[in-house]
Image (tube, rainbow, N blue to C red; front, side, top):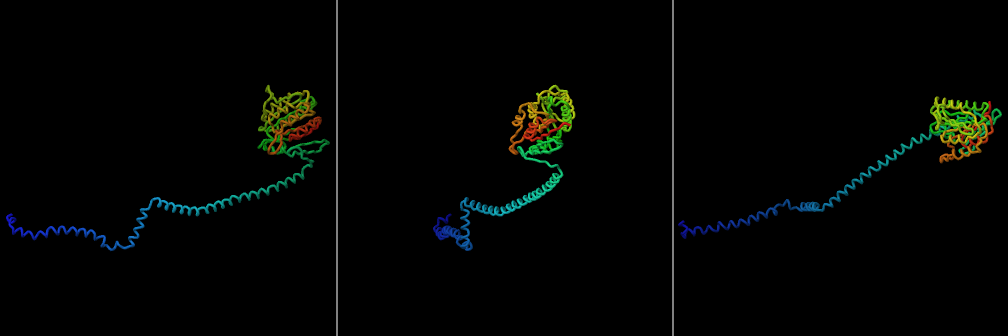
Length: 365
C-alpha cells in the first residue's frame, strides 16, 4: 500500500499497461477473420457442375402445383389410350367368332325341313290312286270344295269346306284349337270334329210313319258315340222350338251338357216323350243354337221350311265372321240332312254350302 504512494512503484507499473488492454481488443478482429475463411477456403464445393445441377431442382420445387398435376394427368391419359387400343381388337374378334357359331345350326335345320315333304307327297299320291274318283269344284269363300258322287241311282252332294279343315283335325268341321284328339261326332254318316255339338231335328207331322222313330234312334246312337269331354244339346222344331230337357227337370237346359252316360240317358228319356206338331220352322231352334257357340250344328228335316227364308237370312248375318287372317268364315259349321224326301233340298244345300258344312240326302230304307 505504501508502495503505491511511492513514485518509483508507479513507474514500475507504467510499462505493463500496453501489454494488457491492447492485445484484448486486437483479438476481436481475429475472430471475424476466422468466420469469413470457411466459405472461401473449401475448394470442393465451388465447382461449376454442382451449382448448375442444384439450380433446376430448386426451380421445379418452386414451380406451381397445377403444372405438376397437369403433367401427371397427361401421363395417365396416354396410358389409358394404350390400354384401350390393345383391348378393342380382342372384343371384335370375340363378337365375330360368336356370330359364326350361331348361324351354323340354322343351316342344318333348313336342310332337314326340305326332305320331309317328299315322303308325304308320295304317300298322298298312293292313297289317291287307291281311292274313289270324285268330281270337285272350288266354290264359296276360303276354297270350299263341293264333291259330287253317284250311288244307287241317287245324286248326293257333299260340301265340305276347307274352312272347317282349318279348325279341326279331320277336316270335317270347325273346332277349337287342341280338339284334334277328341272323337268326331257323327250323325247319319256326316262327321264333325270339335268339342261342342247341337242337334236340331224336325218334329213336324210330316215326320210320322216311322221317320220320326228312325231319326230318334240315329240321334241316340250319335250321342252315345261322344266322349265325356265333349258337350251336346238337342232341339226339336215344328211350329215352335222344343229345347233339351232332362226327364227329371221341369225347365229346359240353358247350356250344353257333358256327354256322360248319366246325361245321355236322361236326354234319351226326354227324347222319347217328344211328339209331332204342325209346321216346319227351324228359326227359333237355330237362333238359340248359335248362342251356345258350338263347333258344329246338325239340321235334319224332311221337307221345306215354313219360315219364308227367315232361317237362311239369320244365318247369313249372325253366323259369319270377318277373320283378318283367313277372311270370311262361319262361327259354327252347319251340316244339313234331307231325310227321306227332297222337298227342302235347295235350302238345305244352300245352308251347308254357305257355312262350311256338308249336305247329305238320306233315302228311306
